[in-house]
Structure formats: C-alpha cells, structure tokens
Amino acid sequence: MRRLTPGRASVPIRTTRHARALLASGLVALMVHPAGAAAQESESPANPQSQDPVAAVDSIRASYDRPAAEPPTDWVDVVEFPLKVVAFPFKLVLVDLPGWIAGQVLVPRAPSGFVRAYRSMLNWGFRPTIRASIGPRSAAAIEGQLFRYDPLYVHSALSRRGSQRHRVGVLVADPRHSFVAEARWQRDAQLTFYGIGPDSDPDRGLYSRDYWDLRARGTTRLSRRTGLDLGLGFESNKIDEPVWSDDESIWDEFDTSDLYGANDDTRYLRIDGGVTLDLTGRREFQDTGAWLRLQGAAWRGVADTPSDFHAITAIAQGYLPINRRQQLALRGVTRIARSDSDEMVPFFHLSQLGGSRTAIGYSTSRFTDNDMLSLVAEWRYEVWRDIHDIVRSEFFLYFGEGTVQRRLGEVSSGDWQASYGIGARMVMKERLLGVAFLGFSDEDVQVGIRGDWPL
Image 1 (spheres, rainbow, N blue to C red):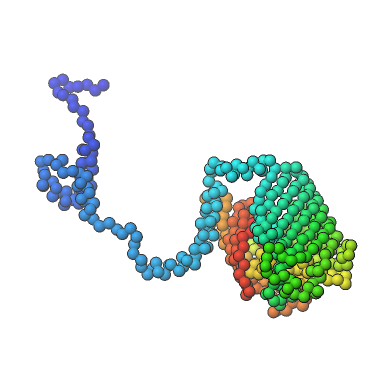
Image 2: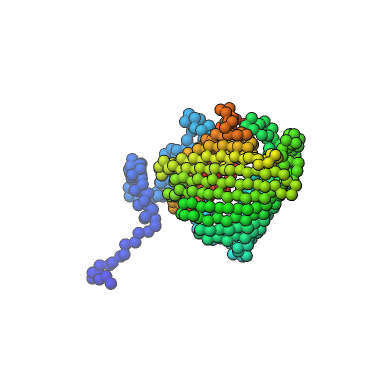
C-alpha cells in the first residue's frame, strides 16, 4: 500500500480514451504535416481539445493522393502477355497442380465421409481402383480388387472404351520367391492395325480381341542383383468387330486373307521365361545405374491351330544423374518374332512400334512387323519440391528413334521413325506417382496420363 503525504491530496493519474486519441493524432500530425499542426496550434492555443482529433487525422489523410489500385498497362505487360499464355499450361501442370496435390496429400485434416468409406472397404478386403489403362488403347478404367481371402484374389475391370479384364488367381510370395496361378478373360475393345512394314499407311482399321489366358508363373531371386522367371500357359484368341466404335474395321481397310489370325480362332500352349540383371540404386528421387532383361516365349498351336512361333525380347535401361536436380535416362528395346511352321505369326503377336513404351509420338501399334527396334532418351529436370522433401515434380524432354522390318538386318536409313515429347512427372523417393505427356511425330500429336512409365 502506498503511503500518503499528510496535508496533500493524492489524485491517481488516469489516461482517458479521448486523451490517448488526442495524443496519437498529435504525433501523426507532427510527423506527417508539421506546418498544418503549427497552424492548428495557433488557431486554438488555449483549448487543444476544441478540435475533434479523428476529424483532424481524416483531413490530413485526405490531403494526400492515393496510388491507383492497379498500375496502368505499359509495354512490358504487352510483351509479357503472349509469353504468359504460352507458359500457362506448363505452369498449371508443373507448379500449380503439384502444389495442390501436395497440399491435399501432406496437410493433415479430418477424413471425409468418402475417405472413411474407402478405408472401411480396405479393412474388409476390397479395393476400388481407377487405372490409366487395362490393355492396349483401353483408356481409363475402374477396377475392383477382392483380396479378403488372401492368397486368393479376384479382380474385375471395365474401361471407358468397352475393354474388360476379369481375373481370379492365387499369389504366394516372399522377399525372394513368388508363384502365381491365374485364369483371365480379357476383351481389348478397340485395337488398331495400320498394316505391316515401316512404310505402312496412316489409315487404320479397328478390331477387338477376346481371349482366355490360363497361366502359372514362378520367379526367384538368384542373388541381390539377378532374378529368374519361368511361366507356362494356354491362350485362346478370337478376333471380331470393334466394340462401341463406328470407325472402319480391319475387314473394311485391308485384305485380311494375308493376316493370319484375323479370320480364324487360334489356340496355343505357351512357355516363356526371362532373366533380369538389376544394377540400379536409388538416390533421393533418382534411379542410378543400369537394368537389363532378356526374355523369350514359344507358342505351339493346339487343336485346329497349325501355327508355331517364338519371340525374343531384349531391354536395356540406364540412368545417369547429372546433378541433384537433373538426370538422363536411356532405354533400348528390341523384339524379334519368327515362325516355326508354314503358317505365319498371328498379326496381333507381331512386334509393334508405338505408344509410351517405344515411340511416344505415335499411337500404340502404329508400325507392325516381325522385328522391332526402339531407342529412347529422356532429360529430366526438377521444377518443384515440397517443403517436407517428400514429393517433387519433374519436367522432361523426350527423343526417340525406332523402326520395324521383316528382319533387322534389312533396316535402311529411310525406315527410322523419329518421336519427340515433353511432359511432367510426379515422383516420391520410393516410387513414381504419375506422368502427363505430349508426344509429337510427323503424323500426329499424342496426349496421355499414365500411372506407370517404362523408364
């Protein structure tokens, strides 16, 4: 408690709201407009509270010109406008979209009703999935996967173009070995055929292929870097009119008497196998090293199918990091198909060039013949990375050359088909999330979004 001096009244000093406002307005007036403050002092020296402080501040503020809300258009804006228009799709794909996806994935939030329902289905043993493709030219598809009774699984899918895939099988796997036995019925609804040879016409015909595929396959890791797989199967093929399409069929565009398998159902026993050498590693978001695979398959006709043939495929991929943000990826693929009987190889089992796996600027199966060779290079550059260092977006440039021919030894300089492309990749440190691309060639422009990528 404070002591009071006898004989003197103690009056507590209180600052009223009006006094604080007056003090603030005076300070503003002195700092901003000292001459105006002096004039106001001279007009009312005896009573400083005679003028409303709020009005004084408002009058000072009104005496100054405010800047325009938007600066006027100048020549810089005129020059920048077409550049912004051209760059907008790339900004949307490479910056805005990855940022939005990262925000949806990384920002914690309460699960929505849709997410809770999805998790309930997963817990029960059913997974609904959207796939970019379930087969050649299938377009996007919806697939349901039943895995409740593991190791038994059941998958069923339907695509936007009418393709279907239904599978039931048993999968047993551990870190070194795996075995799968599966029965599959598949319909490829709108397959394309352009003729045979490197100079085939761009006019196409469509067809559908329905087939049963019964297979058993085992894989084993011989070492940390090498793997071996072996399979045995049976397939039954039926070629028919395209599904859900008014385009011309192969029977309208070609003389199908020269296309073995177009007019007759075929059935084959199949044995196939391959060996893989994996010398790659993972450094942050980038693969490094090389990956090699050699595989072969032999088809033997059964029942009334007099055709026997075989095919050999070799794949080599290399990854060369330039620095932390840049990388060069290379891929070479060749496939050789040969007939072992008087009948030819069925036209749908010939080697094909086109699509994201061999030539990004051409549609799938644009070129067809016995032998195929594809050489591809991609330069990748990081354009965005989330602040948690979990996801990044890469821009890539693509260049490829490829060809088909009856025999690779008969390839001439005029048989090569160039293919170019640009695109964006979304990558995590463990895996690829997806790819969006534009492919260019002398004939066409291809646009696609995929959940996987050959490189």
